[in-house]
Length: 202
Image 1 (cartoon, rainbow, N blue to C red):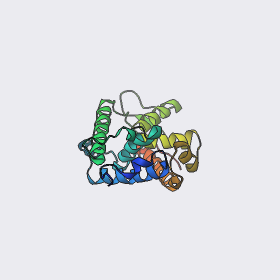
Image 2 (cartoon, rainbow, N blue to C red):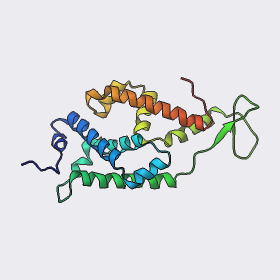
Image 3 (cartoon, rainbow, N blue to C red):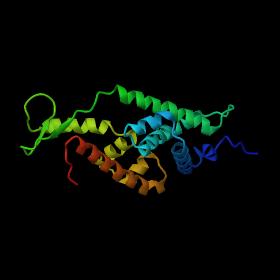
Image 4 (cartoon, rainbow, N blue to C red):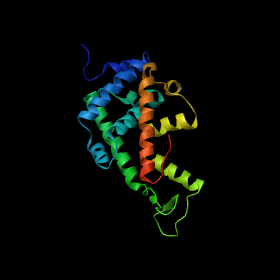
């Protein structure tokens, strides 16, 4: 008789990693959507996106050849309970890290000039290229790990969604999902930059 606490995908990590990933993705998405851990709910209340957070956690579990999942042992705790505990710890770490980080710089448009100005002390001035780059870096740092990874691979390394899927070792049927995620992450980045006073064309 099969052990109900041991999901079938745990037996596929080596023999069929594509299917293992797909089934684990669905399992975890349902689990954390129906019952988000307290720290995840707190992050969502602070304008974090639940989809981003779940993707971030899933990526942590499946990277390095499913390293995290391979640590599960059936010792009186079901896999779902074990994973929920791991997720809770993961989101508490993210929450503590977020609260330790200095606040992102705040800038606003100068209505009397074409450029932007600092909202802090000092005379208004047009931002130079390196200042805009610094704003970009700080804005990207506010995004979840999964989005940061996708944006770096797409816009810095020039990889297409199909190439990203292959590089990350994801199932081949994830091409459309990665493409959709890229669009979502790019729109999110543009929104964050817009909140910082930087308009992105395209």
